[in-house]
Length: 183
Image (cartoon, rainbow, N blue to C red; front, side):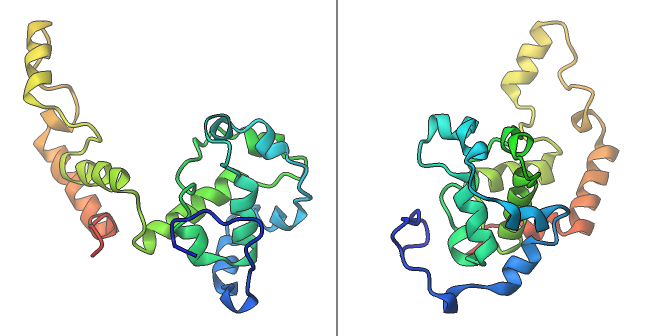
């Protein structure tokens, strides 16, 4: 199965391909032990904001893959990054499974494995470099000036010392290395 293909329900899962250590790491998320309580009521998928736009999106399937230890398939799954984190699924779960929190843990694990969407990586790199996901540019400076505003907003753009602090934090935390493009 190609890394970015969605798993079909008829695909055979080989126990030799399952990663118990991955499953155990997922289960370190507070509340994740409730994952085994899921009885497939479909409450999480029935009102899913993302599923309204992408009918094949199924958070239940993603969490089942995590519970089975399907590390490679899950970290490279095309829908891993589609959740809007609206928390509807988590609020509706009769078993109290923290679906979104678990999914965010899995995304973090993906990033630490070097797996990140290109657009997310670009935004992260802009944050690391400029302190902003959408840094100020000459067009915006001009528009601000025409509106009688300062060219630079009261953010790190206007405070070089603050930007230097952002750079230090990025370096000390390893965020710069985490968001580098993987070869």
